[in-house]
Image (cartoon, rainbow, N blue to C red; front, side, top):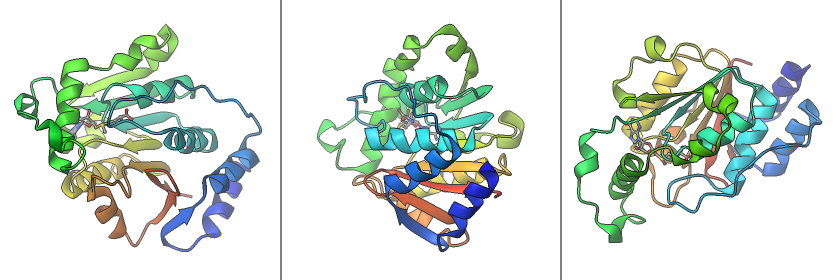
Length: 237
Ligand SMILES: C[S@@+](CC[C@H](N)C(=O)[O-])C[C@H]1O[C@@H](n2cnc3c(N)ncnc32)[C@H](O)[C@@H]1O
């Protein structure tokens, strides 16, 4: 039944990047699951995490796809990792971020350029991750913490099939250059036959890498939820 609903949803849109309203996704969620409950945390105030609209997009997709193994690229402070953990019965949530000794962490950050220059922004996020760690995970209960496995590795150097295995939900939010987004997406595809890929920072005012990369993926049907930074593609249906 769920499969048919997802198929029908996908069939009602043309290929390429499709702009949808949050309401369109909520309608599909309502058809698949009448459970109106979600759990959330107040939106983070830190630069570099997700907005309230992004949260609802991710939670809709969780309820629709009911994944078993989730991969996040870019743990940062663990906010989205926590959100995923408290809203899913998935057996495993894998979250990748750089090792603590990564060289970008010792770079000097020009504070005036954090919201202007994409490279400075990415290095600021790497730096903050190194200094503050996955602080949002501290609020989780033991059973939610037990679902999470943190992988400390440069995602562009990771052997995805060996280190990650099979996944059915991916949230790509690591480095934002077009090259890193392409590499992370390739890694995700090597682990996913069926599921959903969510890219964060599509149409971002700072980063153009995700937008440029997705605009070249003409063989994929990609949905951008208006007023969010999330674009997603449902694979294998
Ligand atoms: C935008 S933040 C992630 C935000 C997080 N997903 C959230 O919603 O709260 C980006 C993170 O990606 C990490 N990152 C950047 N380049 C990376 C790479 N090549 N491999 C792994 N992680 C990377 C940074 O250290 C940073 O913590």
